[in-house]
Length: 112
Length: 114
Image 1 (cartoon, one colour):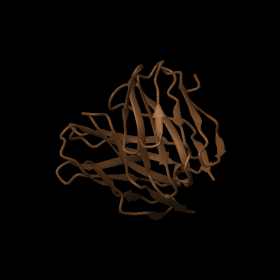
Image 2 (cartoon, each protein chain N blue to C red):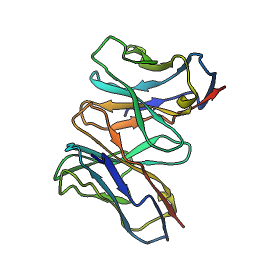
Image 3 (cartoon, rainbow over the protein chains, first blue to last red):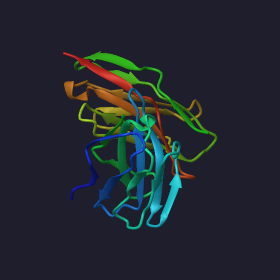
């Protein structure tokens, strides 16, 4: 039982490049989330999903896209990377509303 | 919109002493959940304690307890018998029961002095 896994751990992008951050959970959780954490700040919700085929915007969705074709996977897509997207990205999952969120180890992304 | 405020950017406590971290929130909802998460240097987010808004009894997990004051919209975390391993960033979080969105505070960095 690996929990929530994220790849890659680190990535450097040039402005305008695109990439996908991968997130997988093996706990059969319905709810999945993407957050970003800027230096000295708390986590801000980018997108979340309450089940396969359902996604919704969080607090800071601009510049990102998500999909949820399976229960296990919740990839985050950056289409045109900008320096403002330099951050640490966390994926999380939970079984049901109000229950504990389990976090992945994070992806540190730098856009130069 | 809901907000979560942690007014103490940093705190220090002597090992074995007790420390209280403050958190206030703003919401018009009556049904929600509150959490404290710990983030050590490893960056891993670890749940410390959770509280359902409909429960009047304060949650407790070993050395960690909360003081939940719903009317005052306050949710402080008390750490008793502080240990060196408690050194970390602590985040307070609010989760709506209506739309499942989660709002985090900016965090409090806790230092444990040996």
